[in-house]
Length: 292
Image (tube, rainbow, N blue to C red):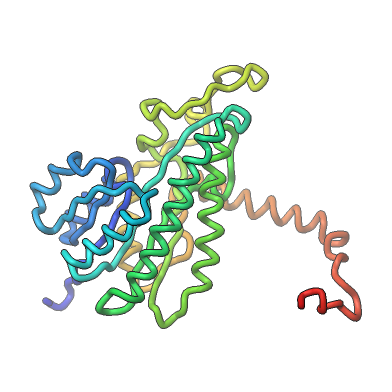
């Protein structure tokens, strides 16, 4: 390859139908990289298939189907021979106070936003370690600012992202350095993507005790300027070119402010309970036999 030019990468993107996934697919291909784009409706990406030909492998995937996940990774190996970057992006969203959300809807949300994300991450790790000709790869996992700082009427969605944060941070510490697998949690704030729109149909009316049909989606408009999703995916793409990835990638003014507020909040909690909370350990003669 000509000196000074980066080697094209092979990406696998879940949730490529709309939003961040579609934009990332377009960006990756425009930079000369190859892409395995997965979604529930591959026909919606036919324009990209026509434009980029064999550089785009456009596949159907329901991320809640474990066998389907394995199949798209196998197809990626057969078509491109390797994967360099996995963008674990597919997800759902809805609004509603905790009391108003049906359990069935909440469980479906966890199936997609947590269990499916974990399944894709596990398969990415296995592929990077066991299948890639050169061991290693980069894994980007879509989280959210509400996974760090929940707001009202979005509690179940925030819970899924909170769970993704926890399991991913644990996984990061389990991966052996010699596997050369790097992982980044992408934590966007408020960006104008379809997951926030009324067209999604995912609204659960608030009981009158909570103020009727006042909706988070409407109130969100007052919490700051929304982010441009095209700028967000450009940042993610640029970070993917780095030799060393960050564990966290907060994107947007809202999430930066939230992180600073969260740090102050937890510092205040630690200060308040440092004396009483810090005096609960065993003294001399700790009974470690209870662990046997």
